[in-house]
Image (cartoon, rainbow, N blue to C red; front, side):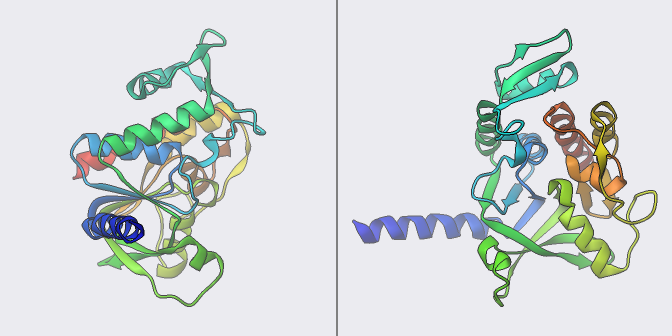
Length: 254
C-alpha cells in the first residue's frame, strides 16, 4: 500500500505538471486578483496555470486585518461575490463585510473547479523572453529559491503572463531589470507603491490593471505598485474587479 500511495501521487503530479508545460496564461501569485483572473479565464476555455510560492494560495485575504478574519467589499464588486457563491452582510448602504476564510476558500475552490491548475510552493526565478516579448516563466521550488541553492529551474511557456505578486511586483521588476526595456508606466519603470489612500487606491487598482509590456499583464496590488499608486488595506473589491478586468483583457487578445 505504501508504494501505491507514493506512486499515485508522483504519477498524478507529474502528469499535471507535464500537461502544464505550455499554457495559454501563466499567473504568478495566488492572491484574490490572481484567483479571480484564473477563474474567469478558465471558465472561457482558456488553459491556465497559477504559481504560488507559499503553501496555501490566497495571499493576504486569509488574515483579514490584523488577523481579524473579516474583510470589506464595496457594492461594485458584489456581482463577483455572487458568481463565487460568497456570503456577505451589509454594513452600510454600499459596503459589505465578509468572512475572509470563507471568501478565500471559495475563490480557490471555484478556480480549480473551472479547470485552473494551481502549483503551490513554486517560485518564479525569471521569464522567458523571445522577440522582445514575455513568453513564459522560469520556475523552481520555493525552498530552493529561499535557500539560494544552485539548482537549475524548469520552464513554462505561455501566451500571456500575469504578475499578481502583490506589493513586490516581482515579475515586472525582473523583466525591467534584466532586459533594459521600458514598461507601460509613466516613468517606463516600476514606480513603487505609495502610502495608504483607500478610495484612490481602489479606483487605481482597476485603472492600472493592464498590459505593461508585450505578453506581461499586472493585476491586484502589483498594478498599483508598478504604476506608483496607493495601497488600500483590507478592502477587496478593487482586487476582485482587477482580476475580472485582466481576464477580460487577455481573453480579448487570445
